[in-house]
Image 1: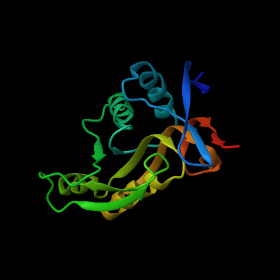
Image 2: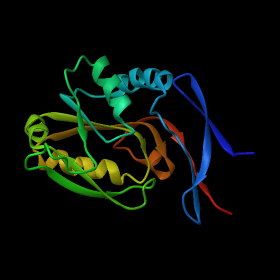
Image 3: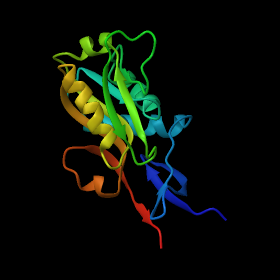
Image 4: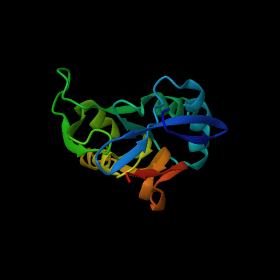
Length: 181
């Protein structure tokens, strides 16, 4: 029988499968892609905690449904997605590298020149599904700052492990890490 971890977020309960990611560590796999109910319940709760922001940004791909719903609730006309690879349509992209707990290998995060121009001088809210090591959020923060934006908030549905102790992030619930025995 598969091990799971039960979590409730904004009145919605999910059983998360516990997945081993290396010899010493397992995580409860939290995937919001396709989970309309959870995203629509969590987004208004995050909105309540967000300071004033002019634009939202997330990394491709798991944060996209959340950033969409938050931007819709805030009546924003657009949001920005930092892409995981340089796309042919990108002119002079800003690039950063990240190694996250889930990928465990180097990944690029890219911001198109048009998006970078849009961010310039604006108060930016960085949105993700889960903040764990903080590597992905830091990479997005560097992209925003390179583009001349001002990071006004960093928010996620869940803070995993020690991330829950951080004072510089907004989150709804704590998600533990599972040490291997």
